[in-house]
Amino acid sequence: MRTWIEKQLYLIDFALASLARKKAKHFGLLLLFAALVFVLASVSLYTHALRRETQSLLAASPEIVLQRLVAGRHDLIPPGYLERLGTIRGVQKIQPRLWGYYYDAVVKANYTFMVAPDMAIARGEIVVGPALMRARGLAPGNGVSFRSYTGELFTFIVGDVLPQASELVSADLVLMHEADFRAFFKYPEGHYTDVALSIANPQEVKNVAKKLLNQLPDSRPILREEVLRTYASLFDWREGLMLALLSAAILAFVIFAWDKAAGLSAEERREIGILKAIGWETGEVLSMKSWEAILIALAAFLVGYLAAYLHVFHQHAFLFEPVLKGWAVLYPRFALPPHIDGLQIATLFFFTVVPYVAATLVPIWRAATIDPDAAMRL
Amino acid sequence: MIELSGIRKVFNQGRHNEFCALSSIDLTIPAQRITVLKGPSGSGKTTLLTILGLLARPTEGRVKLLGEAVSGLPERFLTEIRRKTFGFVFQQFHLLRGLSALENVILPAYPLGLPRRELLAKGEALLARLRLDQRRNARIEWLSGGEQQRVAICRALINDPQVLIADEPTANLDTRLAKEFLAILESLAEEKRTIVLTSHDPLIVESSLCDRIVSMRDGRIIEIYDRR
Image 1 (cartoon, helix red, strand yellow):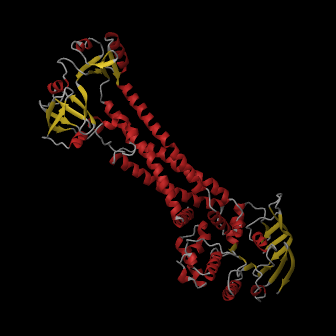
Image 2 (cartoon, chains in turn brown, blue; image 1 turned 180 degrees about the horizontal axis):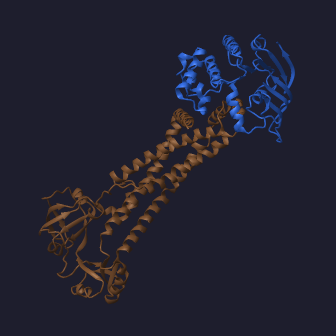
């Protein structure tokens, strides 16, 4: 065993020396490989973090959100609607909600204005999300003005800033007093944006949704699991779109890797011949060349993955933001909480490092099985 | 030590450029002697050397090493025998550029997995013996032709082989360096090693150090002259 380890150390030694001898070629290969890993890892880390964030947020959301439709469009919940909901069996809690979107032309971002019934917010005060605070340069105690859709200017005092625990949901939030909200959006008294419903038995969610549709034909119940599924497909679609865009780059890398790493030069063939002539077995040449490929691939993987981590979690994935976020680029910029998944790393590793090492071995094996006397004639 | 019988070697067999490099070779290489294969270019010296050193297989015929037939053995076994029995000094030295003299010397021993300290000591001792200890860390391309040849000899000796094979060892050396090589050869002969050389350099062929002279022409042995 000790001899085997010593032998592998010699082979690694030789592989490192061999890499150092052709610095330019191997450095170029390493950079290109790292760039490929960086791009793939960025897409993967970003979409994975988004999915995870969405799942954790929606886990705490109501089982059903009920909207009212008029002429196929979302409309306000009128007075008397809540009372009718209360008669439906299975509905445990009814929470009418007030929220709306506001486009801030100053920073070119969309905010969500919302009334938080469980938070005591004084009239004329607001509680803002961390991204909005950054975008507008706000701090508690500052005043901020928004022009409503009627053209009227409203000034609020920032009472507090929401915690950063989940920026995805809180980044663009502006929480305010119900009276302020109604005044800003000109919402009539007794009207609501939608209703959050808690269901006593989670197994009965679909049945309750059917009952809602039967009794309130102008309603649209949105189930939490449907939202989760929609988000999952959306992220999968975006990830797929991004990977499709990158496929040309991946193909270019494969061709480059095959040509530069695997397609051996006359000099490399000569070296293999010499090694065989001085007593190296085909297997030992293959092991040494495998170490070479593994060292390049591992270094590139580490560099690429680390760069992707920094890009996604510290630089907001600025390179791929428009594709991955879609219309959400209008959202105030939010930071995803860093998260690394073992399976995700293993998958990326399997689809980058393993094919590269395998691709380099075939031509090396072909070169290593030549008669060693060929070396004497080179 | 090595017996060749009925050796024939054909390159590109069955193709339009088929070429018979050796035919009807019967030769015995005695142990602990210096044998020289001499002949003009294209006479088949190097091809015969590669077959003697188990670097290539004959198209026909048999190679025996210490009485055992080895030419039909699988490549893995041949490599094992070659590693333990033969040391090679190639005409162009075939040293690896970018590596130091010491790294080149110990290269054939890497697959054996010897303890590093032991292997380095062995390599350094060989370099010191051939007066290269001051140049052990110099990259191979920085060395002169004579120094490179001595490194190649050290590399051939690192696994302590019984047989040293050298192809045209003085072809790239001037007279002074060629004489230096002869001195090294003498010291190796004193260690009772079997040495096989190819050469058409009179300095080697006419040297009293050489025990047997095998003359070749057009892929055949035309004369064997035994000095002992």
